[in-house]
Amino acid sequence: MEIVQTSPSFTSSLSSNFLDRNVSAHRILVVDGDPLTHTLVGESISDATASVVSCHTVDEAVSEFLAVRATADAELDLVIWGLSAPFEESLGRLREARELAPQSARFLLLAPQEALAHAAEIKSANVDGLVLKPCRMSDFKSGIERTLRRPKETTGDSVTLRSVSTSASGLDLGLIGESAEMKRVYSLIRKIGPSMVNVLVTGESGTGKEMVARALHTVSARSKKPFVAINCAAIPRELLESELFGHAKGAFTGATAARRGLFEEAHEGTILLDEIGDLPLNLQAKILRLIQTKEVKAIGQNSSREVDVRIISATHKNLKNMIQKGEFREDLYYRLNVMPVHLPALRDRKDDILLLAEFFLRKNAEAGRGPIRLLSRRAGAKLMSLPWKGNVRELENVIERAMVLADGDHITDIDVMAEESEPVRATAEDLFNAGLSLKDIEREYIKYVLNRTSNRKEAAVRILGIDRKTLYRKEKLYGIRTDSEDLN
Image 1 (cartoon, rainbow, N blue to C red):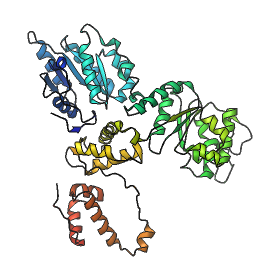
Image 2: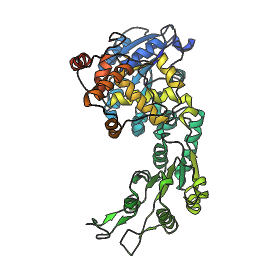
Image 3: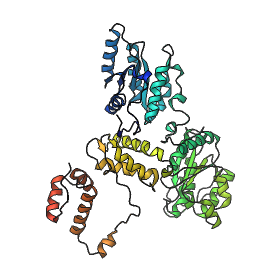
Image 4: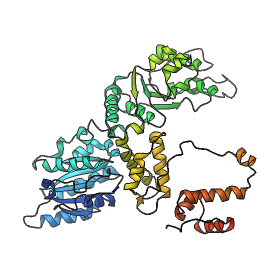
């Protein structure tokens, strides 16, 4: 049997009968409050001969442990234990349960990536293996097989952070992706992160440049100090200098009090100058001087103050072309671009699309935007086929939209509504010039939403922000007819 959907924990389109002969002969107990874990494990080994018992609470697991211990010649080979927040309490229950588990049982911990903050406690729990989620099915399979191969007399003391997150993974960096392109980025981050050199992160809009900057800060010796980010394109030019360097009281109209700039806020830490290509030339000169002197002078002050800050810059623009046009200082470019990191576009790392989609599905569910849903085969295929001009940011928006549109337990291909290649947005002036009344606008928008949702009323009312009775009334009022019956 083949899995035709995915969960936020595992990647799709993999054979459900993934366990080899050595694994399939074992007795396995699954302890997790997340029903998707039980469903997927059950489907994954449905054709195997493994004996699988599902427990949704710790108390149920303890009862199973006691029952196994009371049965002569009975053994339990593997316990897949789902860790949940609050992690300290969950790990405490795990340690208590281990005391009651049969000696034959090995423990594989399945934990969200946030659990890395409790690596020391995980190590003390003496688990035999650990898999972080979201993960690929192949990673899950490998985790099971490695755990079962561990000698029974070996304790979990040898489980280290490296085994929690291998060098090929970006989970410990707060990044998602298993493609070869992203593995090269992870390797580069780990190498240059601790070096303290200035870094220039390049890549198209929406590729996750700020996430890379945060990862560089996390693996540096400055990780306990401030990380300050500013988007140079989002702040009016007349305010940008004050934001970066601060100002003295009375330095200009409205400066009723002295204010520290962001460079001082980031003292001994890291500052991210996002969209550095939009920085005016006069401020480029001031930043160059700051790099050279390690001093900052606020607007309206005569004296300078020392600052110790690591600068990470990011841009989607071609700075070399800007240098040739006289729009960016060449000397500043080489000061900022000591170590370059380039992020690939999402269309160039398609192996990561489904993994990212599943991560965003779980993220939205945990944020209360709907229940955790599975991707249908067609939805996954559609995601893989899209050009993703907006990169990861666009994918996140598409998944959030699909969560609103979806009915039932699955995200379908109809729910996957990508951005228009050339979006056309009507302004109030456009509507006025067209002579449209408020009723005209409402009628056309309701028709548009019904068309885009394939006349699914539940999805339409969520988008329109009205109840179902109101929708029917407006359809009748405006004479809106649909070609298909309500699919719900």
